[in-house]
Length: 394
Image 1 (cartoon, rainbow, N blue to C red):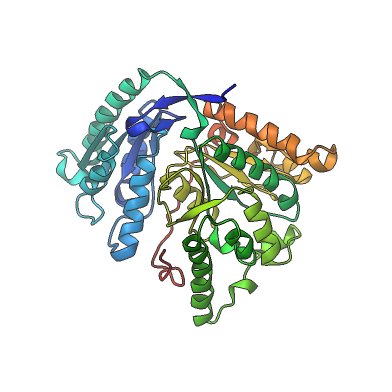
Image 2: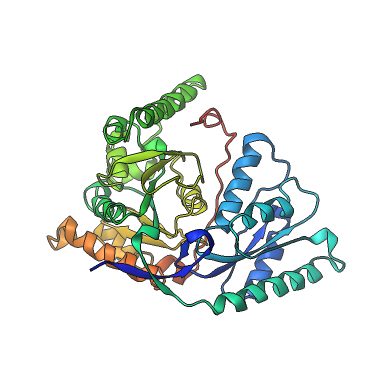
């Protein structure tokens, strides 16, 4: 029997598992306007961020691509873009990028609205409420998992993560790929020491070369500023959790991606060109990573956490899975799937993977994750011009 989930049909064959109305500020100056609009609209979600003004070059491109990518995520029905009017990442630019997705979009600038922010909020609410009413008319329909894009993330990793939660996620990732779906593994700085294992799974020589060259360039750039990155990782939290080397951390990271062949390497927030498993260039920072995954089109994200993490995403629901018994106890309200029973109850990784798979299905069908219930909606956009990352190009 074909496994399915109940989702929302979107233009261009996309499928959403949420039905959000995004209120997108083009610049930090109107974050509060966007938040107030979203608070007055059913299923409204503001995407506040600290950027949009005075950006240029690659930094401009990364920010605009990520903001528009979040807005066109399949979990979004429609978008209201609000600008101030004097920034260089304009509301018109973002609206034009969103319009390519064929979903409803409106835009305006606060400086062009007589009555200032009070009137601008009222205008934003009018636009968003109309979209919300139209979105409410949509009904969930059955879709197979070839329509799903899964984001893979880990944060607060410990020595237990790589032998409990992460391998269970890998089984789920492989399952989605086998069903014709898509999975994305970011955190390229946490491939270091395991790149030979990833290269063995590349579908061709060009993908092999991309994986190797990305890491070579990064390590070379850090050396130029007097830093050996292999001495920076693991982080203090990782070390406190029992990890001792970057190789140990990386083995856990790539375990989330199972055993599927690697189709290619994506830039930050770039949508996969085809189905299957993809890698994404992103420096292993949890919120930036999940922002990039959602901007790339992931409708759902699985995050493994050893020491515990509350973070979520405003566009894509984040399922938290943890294999550390203490963390599952102390941060129970933040954890969706308890994988610590591999240790405490002699459960197998396959047992936990099945539990996680059922959670994926229920989340796709509308069940809220703990991050959603608690209201954790976090955004951080990778600044592409930050050295030593600025020279990394595919």
